[in-house]
Image (cartoon, rainbow over all chains, first blue to last red):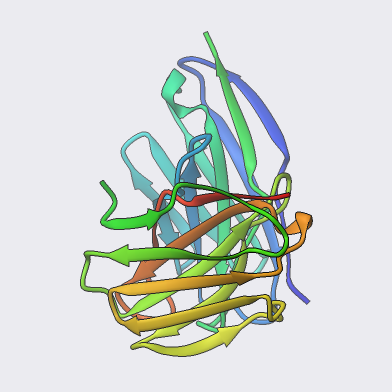
Length: 109
Length: 113
């Protein structure tokens, strides 16, 4: 079966650092995506990890451990506009994309 | 502007109606997708088309019928829907089918009465 877990909600303060975790158990694995989705809007691409390790892109970084079935998205210097849902999705060897339930992040002043 | 447009943005329909959702991508991509997003549920992949051929149909009820007349357009035909089909329907495209970044449209908010 396919199973992806993320915390449902998180809250953090403007200027802080937050880590959003994603664990997965899928029949295959080709890579892991992170998407950001603001309320009422389409998901937008943030990152794609294929190999183990940390990929940094500005204020956002994404980490992957294939052996542990684990990824996280790290957001630094949080801004109010970062309040959104963050979705991790596993590319299951191109068979299909399996999305996690999403983590709703609220950034407080 | 994501390069993927969807119409209509909002749709209210009765259970006996027939309606269609339209998606158009202006990115020159070869793969297109339909997703369903319900409240408090993960995004569910419904259909995938690659080079205008359906490559996936994830156990979707037959009251949803996709159509891909060319690589830029994707339709979702709706017939005799149920109230539980009310959701946000998202279209996405990617350069190729598989491990490729997907670009999403804004979605159609569907309400079935």
